[in-house]
Image 1 (tube, rainbow, N blue to C red):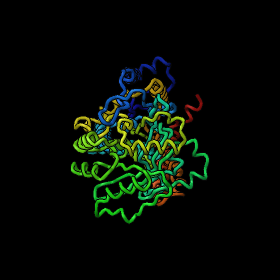
Image 2 (image 1 turned 180 degrees about the vertical axis):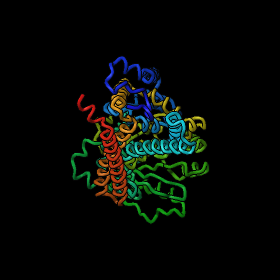
Image 3 (image 1 turned 120 degrees about the vertical axis):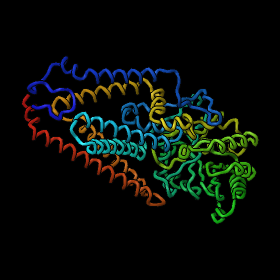
Image 4 (image 1 turned 120 degrees about the horizontal axis):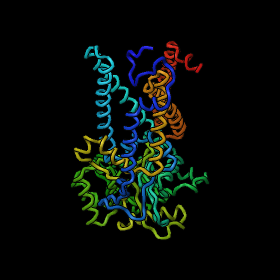
Length: 517
């Protein structure tokens, strides 16, 4: 068999099998690089520092008596989940994704052109560049596909664990399919919140109070899920977005009063306070100017959302103004997810000190938290975050692949490091085997990865379609159909590539040859 055009270690003479020591010699350099890389990963994971904290979002001091953990079973998928966890722990997910995709595109293009140049010395420069662009597109699209899968699959990530059972761990800003842009049902939302360490959830639907009471009263299975507070998210001015939290199901709020053409924050605060004894929190602070902060405090709000998983890009000057205002006025600060059903990663919790809370019923716990917010018990209400959130430095933004990978390695537990070692050597052994039988391992492994991810997207899309049956709009249905379509296309591509490789092997006689060994 000719070695012409073959990329990789030389084939054995005569095509026969070779002994283990000879095979190891062919791949010794690759094995050494893998051992070196895994050793560095292990050493970084052993450092006595966890960049995810948890931290107090007000001053980023490390919290005592709390810890951030990954779900134990997540270690089974560690290398697959790594790209998403690397990006999700960045100060701003969108900036990190953009930077990483650029680096992956450029890196894959450079590697593709270099490999093509070495393999085909006589090729024209245009053909080499074209091959590099092809590799870059494949790498970028594959990474985008994996990220999209984890966005719609809602696989839980970080979980806050507290040592004191009397601490209430709350998410005071979340949505379900009762909101026009929500993706998940009430039960799915509460189950996900429970998996992330919350025992109290505020369901703040858009312009709609008490959207879930009837459903909960008719289903006793909600008793084992986190308690919840009814609320709504509303625009009370051109820039102000507020949360109204309330527990009185008889309270009615006139929708006609919520008009963006004039500032109605003071009116809204008075209605929530006097009408149902609730609390009012200002959210999405990046829309505000510094002068708006004091004015909103004057309007009678109870606090501000200092950290938001969905909108982490809070300008530093707004953040400082909020901190100063809340410190001088005694207002509370909270950290919320603004979860609509995208991804399963939570990085924000509001922890409330409430002695005796563990023995309280769901409704008693909810009322206790509302009272703490309304009475501005800022010392008892602690916004907690996993890692730094906000605008990254220019250097960290540009070098996101390096900076966030280093951060990620320091978060790894023993089980996750072991998972890396097992997966890397399993893939390496498979890679060697495929090389020995004359198959390009990169092609078959890429096809397998795309196919598995595609199947995951199909199942996730079907789940979203089911979630959409009780939705206020067809939004979950549309996202579900898109997920199913992308998943089906991915599975089709994987099948096409796999069948093509098998047919190519059969034409070359590899299957018959090795089938008789």
